[in-house]
Image (cartoon, rainbow, N blue to C red; front, side, top):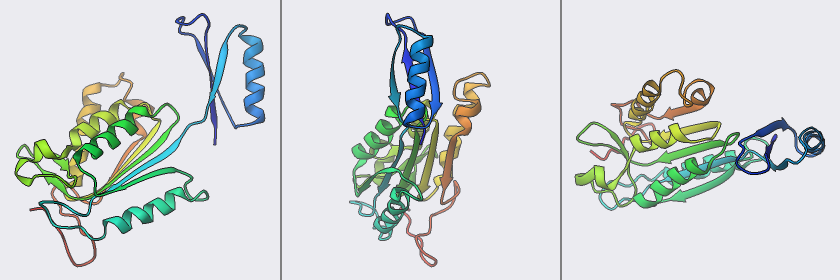
Length: 229
């Protein structure tokens, strides 16, 4: 794991900063000494980039069919990502949560991430399409008759994905019509233009992996499809 050594100028507000990359330990101390000598009067701190994963599965619904395999899928992914040799991620899991939890989990994790961080977001549950043909992710309390007000819009997730400072974000959607997530994110990139912060290297480090196209239902095993429709 690498550290970022960021030095902020004194007095505050001058906006100058030096950033050094290296490995924790001796490299960090060497960088501290070098920058301290070359930039007298500056203060610094070491920040270790984080590897985090937020895994959300919704199997039980008030008004939709149950998805029996969701909890096992979340646990299987958690085990792989948390294993030091294969992932080493700090993993947060949640099963059967309402819309309010989905909103805070997605938006807080993306909003709190910083340059150098790697973030994985996983959702397994029902995906619904609104009257305006937009994808919504369903929490336990979704009302199929009022999707836009009771489920989480993929458009909003795309906006937070676009604005996050994290260097790498991977979104995994295991739900029906998951391919519709691609549309709002692509539109954001096009609107930003070639000179925007979200284009270039920053934008290329956004990956979206879906279990279905924009028109497909998602299978939970080899023989059966469980759909909200």
